[in-house]
Structures are given as C-alpha cells and as structure tokens.
Length: 80
Length: 97
Image (cartoon, rainbow over all chains, first blue to last red; front, side, top):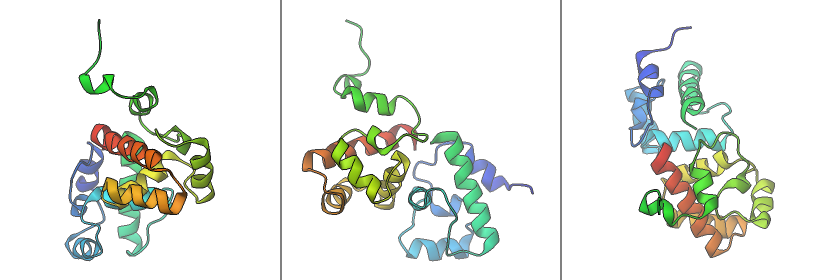
C-alpha cells in the first residue's frame, strides 16, 4: 500500500496549527463535516486519536479512517 | 553563572524534565502538577498515560481554563494541580506540537 503525498507532507514536520484538511484521508467533503463538529485543526483530531489510545477512528469510511489513522500514528511515532 | 534561557530557569525540575524529551509512553504521573492522588484518579478514569491527558487538552483546543475546570471537576484536582498540569501541557505543545 502506498502512502499519499499528503501523508508524507503531514508526517514530515510538527503539525502546529495546520487545518484538519491537511490530514491524509480527510478531503474537502469530510473536512467540512469534521470542522462543523468542532475539529477545525489537525491537533484536535490528534487529541481524539490520543484519547482513544491511538486506536481506531470512527465517523469515516474504512479507507479514510485507515489513511487518517495511519497518518496520525506515524506522526506520533516521529514527534510524540 | 552559565544558565539556559530565562524561561527555563523558572521551570520546576519536573517541568524541565517533562519538556526535555518526547512524551512517548510516559505514565500520567510524569505530567508536572499531577500528584500521586491525582494520578490514581486519572488512571481510574482511563488516563493512565501522559499522551492521553495531552489528548484531552488538545480536544479542548488547548484552552487552559477549560482544561483546568475539567480536571478539577471530573478528576478531583486542586486548583494548583490544575494550573501546573495545564501549563505543562501547553508548554509541551509549544515545544513539540
């Protein structure tokens, strides 16, 4: 399985104040939905990921979830 | 006298230790401000690792006042513990996030 450029860009550096749409697996449509629920920044999604003890994400289809989960897990491996 | 930055000089040894390296799999008791009693309460509620408490802080958009209210009301922290732990997590974010 190859990872996208978006994934590579995200895991290459601290996330700072990057918007939620910068996460792999979160495109424009899902990004808007997620933002409407208060997850406006990538770090808020990271927060949810950590509270779930880096376990599976919910609320997205399987591929989006896998991509996002993989992205966050790799970011954590590098920076957490 | 040789010293680090002005900010580092005012940090507690515990905070300095916490910020000196990535969080990894450190237990929640490593977070500055978390006493043994608070750690027990946090672990009981599922916050056994520092990164999980960090996650809660991030979910609250790094809002220190909100986090402090939560850890006092839901986890039995004192005001002092709440302030120290929120400062610790905020500083971690500034360094690593």
